[in-house]
Image (tube, rainbow, N blue to C red; front, side):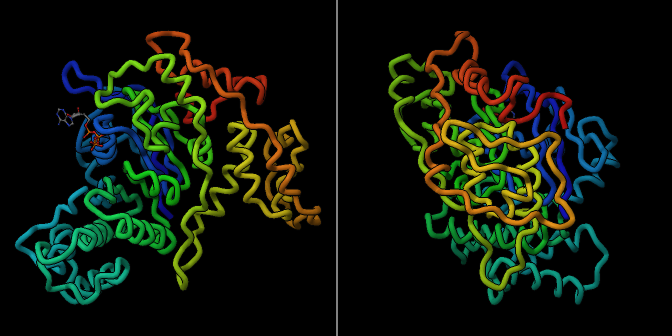
Length: 405
Ligand SMILES: Nc1ncnc2c1ncn2[C@@H]1O[C@H](COP(=O)(O)OP(=O)(O)OP(=O)(O)O)[C@@H](O)[C@H]1O
């Protein structure tokens, strides 16, 4: 299984330009996560920081117990072996055929025999559907094939963490969906921890287990996909609807008028769509089961709308197993804490949760479109207000507090 990546209080600047500050998140092992954000918010800088190509000024990135922000070069070299990276353009050598491009890391970093290299390269080419294209040069194939070749090369050293920078860039919507399917199938086969940076709304809605968003030098949120995909935060609503009006402008520093925010608060988030399933014949994604257990343990800490979406996906057996009662109108599911461990023998299944009851649960109140503090980002006030009814203790739907695991 892939390894966990713990990012804690990370800040990165270039000279006087702060790219992002105090970013904390955990990429759960073996799960697929997506990082969204408008152009220029530092998503690529974040990926490069994760592999140690850029050094953040503050914070930690802990992988297998090693903080790669403060470790020795030797330790960093070892940790880097865990990564496979697919860059935006595939980063293929134009003068090498696909076979040699994909074999390159094996020839550079291992002492494997040519016959073993051949076996491994063909295995990865098969995984991404490129068998038969071994002799092609990068310039002779489509953008989608180049991406898949880049992915095969990222896979060839059997990484436990795969970083994918804008897999959709330069691809038409169909090729993007096909590449997304390859990534989901790969996750099922090798169970690697995957982080995808993308602008593509469809990718964000259908591929990941978890989603985060960078905006105005902050990580707005990071958590189970249901949290962001049902969030009424103006920046999220604008992004997911691809609208010109809202806090995101052509320049990052755009000031959003109260009228514009008010208008945006009337627009609903698009309904959730199911995650991409694995292709027929592929193994199941074990990450799905692990994620479900993890998310159910933190269910009561999530936004009501996210809870509602998660509960909709549960079978009656799972509702019984996790002690989640069907939400009566106006009430949220009650769950005893600490979250229950799965009992040895499942309790008898209750009657199925009536769909009408799930649908009737009121959505969380829309936050005020007016931020409390003119310096604070637009979601800052909204988050506190919306969290209040869920639990008296301090709520965090998105991300983690510093030091929180
Ligand atoms: N090596 C560098 N030196 C100085 N500034 C840099 C460097 N790398 C990135 N930047 C700056 O960091 C900011 C964020 O860049 P980055 O490429 O990470 O954004 P992004 O969110 O990935 O954008 P896009 O979605 O358009 O690819 C930009 O202003 C960019 O100019």
